[in-house]
Picture 1 (spheres, rainbow, N blue to C red):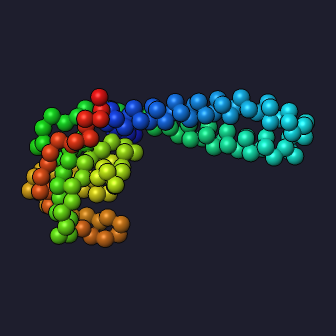
Picture 2: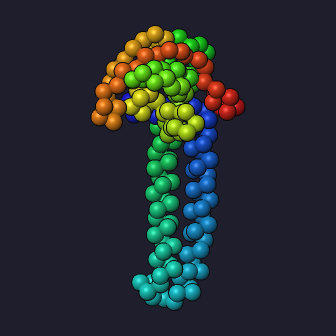
Picture 3: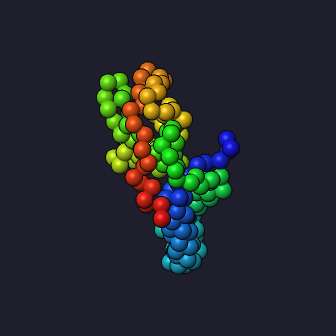
Length: 163
């Protein structure tokens, strides 16, 4: 499963919406190319609006290609049914270097520190995945050694958004 990317249903749906938005924007821009070429005359190399449009199209096409690559590697993970260990979809209370924090472990690309969401593949979440209540772990985050104790594990509150 090393080539697969793990998603919650919420994250997968967000990725699909992003692909839909990028596709629509790409189609809209491509529809403008004939007009931009016509307005600028037949000298494409001197047509700044056409050249800018082509650059924007290439950028969106690249982002769309990356999003499809991610989608092709996506595996949707079911919401956890219990809180035996830290997995995607659980909320974990930790003690890190003497400071308490609460994080929800999320799927690929779902990190949002302001909402207390950590994607499973982030350095901190990687240290927590698979651990049980009471476990202690150590590791490096941003070049600094950290000590973490798992205080509580609960079902994630963000799972409600998956419907």
